[in-house]
Structure formats: structure tokens, C-alpha cells
Image (cartoon, rainbow, N blue to C red):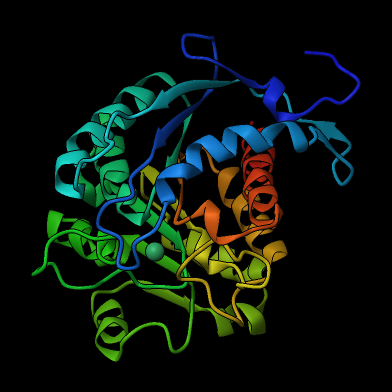
Length: 299
Ligand SMILES: [Mn+2]
């Protein structure tokens, strides 16, 4: 693993390698509110890793955690309902063998099977697990029309995940309905809007979210990349102007990843063809660097 340009692709090893981190690709494109090609994201992430270095000028440390690449779940052509069981099984297997499992979507519908698979692998009830979302949206659309990338949080609530176990950071104005906002508050979610983050800082915002996770045994961090300002991440259909600065996103990901109870981190809603430049891909690659930097802080 020594080369002139130590980079993240050094760390990605074929499945079966002894590794504390696993990567599971979930190329789920079906059921998006805005149809697109989120299914291309796992492949694009693997490709960009050679452009992301391992040395962190801030900490003086070089990333070294080996990642076992479990490949992509075979869900091509399946709708969300059909894909859910397969994604859940893949996450369950990954969580059973690794301290941290990265679930790379796909659209945001991967979050529900991710959380259910995590709970199953650990033998935990949904009242014992937490969900932190970095997302411009509540993802509380109704279930009447079936599962979509707009309702994973609603579906998890219906599954029995208590609202008080949910912390949502980065909610955007003019991108959610009043009904969803009131529903989240009434349900007991911790709601931290993009404006709150801007005013109180990302550090305090993460502190509040982690306070909310107190007493819970395992946590899924959902990184819906549309939380980032659209000018800094054009390849997310739901991203809007005025979103979270990429630097806030990176620091939140690093801090949350350092908590050993975080067993699954997903990356959702990256639709590579929407960005003709390499900006979004490099940002997604940096996401992985921040995840690993946080993970390696665990003692
Ligand atoms: Mn979302």
C-alpha cells in the first residue's frame, strides 16, 4: 500500500479481506420522485477514489482503514419494494462482520433497508436505534403511492422507529411542505434547518443531534448529498441554492463517524450525469475520506 500518491483506492480491497469497514453498493434508481441515474453512483465513487489522497494536513495522519468492497447488490430493474429485502440482507451481513458499513446508493430509498438491516444484524429493536439525516428534506412524503426516495423516514416511522430517535439536519426552505414539517415536530424529531446550521454553526448542530442519540445502541447516518448547496454539488436533483456549505457537510460527517455506535453510513441521491464537471464526484470522494477520518478517531 505504499506509492508515490497514497490514495483512497489503495484502501478498497476485494470482499473477503480483513477489514473493519465494508462498502456495499446499492444502485437503486427506481422510484425517484425525479427520475435519474443514481444507480451509477457506486461505480463512479469507486472510480474517483484514486484522486483522493490519504494524508490529512489537518491531523497529520494518513488514512489506513481497509475497506472490504462487497460489490453491488443485484437490484437492477427492481422497484424499491422488491429491492428492499436484498439491500437489507446485504447490510445485515456487512454489519455482522464489520465495525462500519458504508451503503452507497442509489436514491434515498436505500436508507430504510439500511436501518432495518443494521437493527437485525445487532438484534436490536427499532426503539434502540437512531437515525441522523443530513438532508435538505424531511423524507416524510406519504406512502399511499408506494415507496419512493421521498418517504424513507415516513416508512421507518411506520415500521416502528420512534420519532424521538430521529435527528434531521439541513432542512431547506421552499423544498418541504408545512405538513411534513409539522409532522416531524409532532413526531418528536429533532429538526435543525439549514438556517439553524448557518446561525448556530455545524459544530453545535452536531452536538444537539448527538445529544438526541444518547442512550441509543446503534446509529445510521444518512447522507443525502442534496443537503449540500447546489453550486457545490450540482449532481443531486434535490439540491437547491442556499444549501449547506460542503465544508459543513464534511465536518459533520467526520464528527458523527467518530461515534462507535454509528454502524451504517449511507450516501444517497448522487446522480452523476447531472454534473458535466468532476466537482460532484470529487465531493463524493471527499465524503469517504471524511468518513474514514472520523472512523479512525474511534478509540
Ligand atoms: Mn432525502
